[in-house]
Length: 124
Length: 444
Image (cartoon, rainbow over all chains, first blue to last red; front, side, top):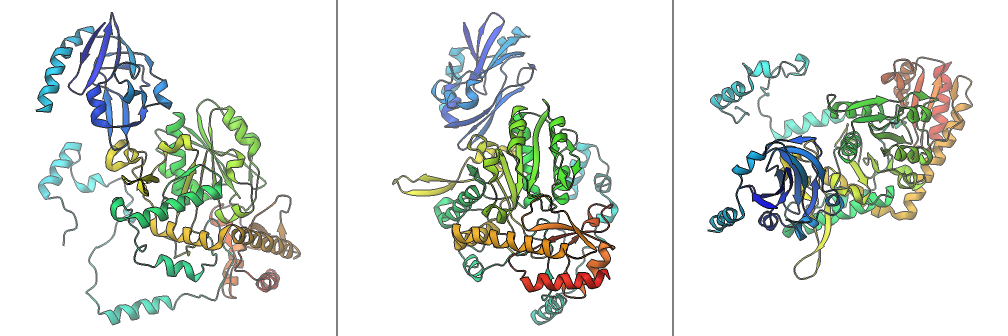
């Protein structure tokens, strides 16, 4: 399984033509305690479409789809316990499971290494 | 003076962007009759001239009239303490306090107001208030749409017709479908609601007591509503809650209403006070401000606006509402009124309203040319059918010291001989007997 990142701080874990997507630890550290998520409910998303909406105690933020794909599942456990995203943003706190329709788009995403470098530039 | 901050260049750019040639074209959908002929005001006047002007306007009021009209807006007595306390400079502002560091008093007052709305309705959370009962009901419909993801709203035809209009205005007709129930004996036809329930229904909106004053128990109906996956929304009259089964016990999911009756005067039509309350699990779906209790860094209890990410200053166009605000001063008046009365006196007030209205209904029914429907219980309002044109009776009674309720023909063209009467604690037994004599005289 390979993991990729966007500049908006979403991640995508890809295996074959299936991807789990969510928001990164860095995104969570910026938002603070998440109190609500509007989960994805459309059949299909294009890259950069709004997948869901997050609300923390102080801010609201959209989650963009890192890749194009058909919605296989949304993480329903987040509906009643959005704090799972705070506890485990890159594992249990996944937002959507997509069946990729344009796997080539992966080329436009960052690898772990390049995302780490990208975060370094943000900290400077 | 130009009141519009945009420059001509900016205006033209914006018009071009949306593909409209002129401001006139942009506003062409608005009926001409709504446009002001001119914004040129008369020359300035001295303080004395202004005082005299308003004095002469005030003199046109007849404050001796006995008011038997209600229909959602009620003439209850407002104790002097309410004016005195709400008029304190610390409270005398309509503004919402965003800065908890310097607004603990107002924030606590709103928190207490929310608590008392919950106590009255039996619900778990309330917001810091809304414009009025009608917009509160419309906000509840939008909230039900957000919670259920469904788009059909069933509207009880026995709801205040003004509220019905507001709901229809608020709900985008391209998104939501509003379906009205049939009216049966001036009550909503519950069988019709059961027929209408289905997978697309977000909510059923009911009013208790209904517009015609009738009380119903909706407990069995709300069970069916929930079975169909929809929410039960109830609009209620706060004064009646001193006596009636609370909407929460009937299974309501969202409870709204007009709280002007609590310590606020009619004021020529506003400002009024809408309230909305719900179950804790739906808190995040509420529109408007919510005050919460918390602890400061020293561990002391304090109050803040909470869950603000729902709101438009953070969430912009995706906010739970972009068309609401709280009515701080009116809410504080309601709080003072409720605290002043306390549980026992509030119940007593409710009983007085109830008993006086029963007496009035019975008394007026003794007249040959007056008919009342006594098959169903009422709180403090009821309809009388007169053997005459109700608008004539209304006009002539006005000349004899009475506002004889509301002619229902104003809202229902077919109800030419019906008056909706309201009896509050302000109406004495003598006044009721005098009104009976007057009606007898006017009906001939």
